[in-house]
Image 1 (cartoon, rainbow, N blue to C red):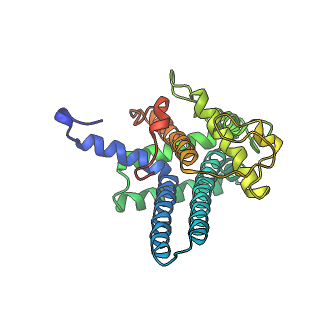
Image 2: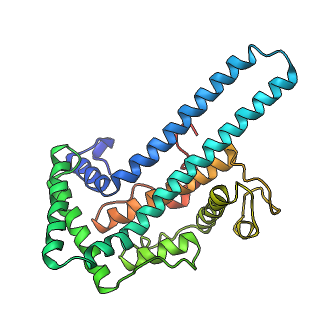
Length: 277
């Protein structure tokens, strides 16, 4: 939100700081991963220009260009893999990770854990990352999650569900359902599930599409088993937009719990490509 005439008010700043503290780590990780990819691609392209300036043979020039294309596709894939893993850890950690902490400790130990949480909030305040109001909201949010999980324990996510359904099932147990009248778009859900399947073949099948992955392909180019899962720039933009949109959706759900306005519209997810690609 902004004040009259588009200016930012003190209340606006406090809202921003309070909400950002909730998912500070994953937000920073996404930014770092995207920036690292851009730096690598820039370096690879500079190296390509330098090499081509010294190579006269056209066959050799073609091999160098092909090598660069493979390198960029590799970094596209690795950037997406890192961000997907961070999202999965965030969602599962909110449920399973927190439950394992609160369920395995006695009341005295649990009190110590929450005190450490408050201490960390005070450190964030001292660093200018959190206001007093935000610290209180964050501590309360953590306690609400803990209480919910103790009442309705979830020891592990339901692996029988597709990735997005698995995440949403877990989030619904800790009162992190979608904001009313803001359901996840079907194409966003399908895109994340598609990339999850592609991620698995990248990590576990040397990048070759299998039958299971094909069942998740919607807009991807693959149609037959054993096709190589090359993540070109077009695919990268669709996948990165979907992952960033889901991360922003989680942030907005957290903001909603604190009575703060949403910052994005999940229906516009395809436009959420980072600056620079």
